[in-house]
Length: 262
Image (cartoon, rainbow, N blue to C red):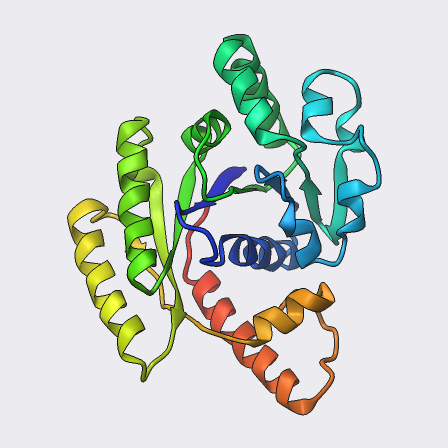
């Protein structure tokens, strides 16, 4: 019954993709998993080929449940066996409501914590921007995974994230794993960035574990375009793509196996 968040104040580093695959990985292990999309683009749905759920109704968002306009079962999309997703409509407006009506903040905290009675894991997907909603959900998270791109802007994203946590009094000790993305074994830039990230992490988040870096895989874009998860059993269109998918799946499984998210 853990609340897990992936975060970084830098877009395009793979937060949504990695969170989605991590959730699917746990659901295939027999865990009942809920993903809350705190990003009103709701890209996580498209990752699993259920993008139609985003626009199929105007009254099945998290905000509708918060106002009592619908039941919890109305806002949940079953994307895979044991894996469910909830969408948001307008996080800016919701954050404003949480800021000016403090009782609403207590309400959303109680709702998320109530979900822990029905799910083994709750995963929260965030946009790179910050808001009161982000602060509330990060604050109640049991563990936070920082997704950091291995380039100059990615390193800036790490430092900006740490500064954001300090400014908003989010406990840095909640950061349990730092996942570097965009790695290539023979390219100079990502290797240099990885070395610098380890130095920064040692200074600012010494208790966080840096995982094996995630390779820069073109297969991810192919999977996303088809709405296929790396952990699906779907056959790829060629032996080349199949091999790349299987290698990426093996890489992620090794990483996820090494994580303790209990």
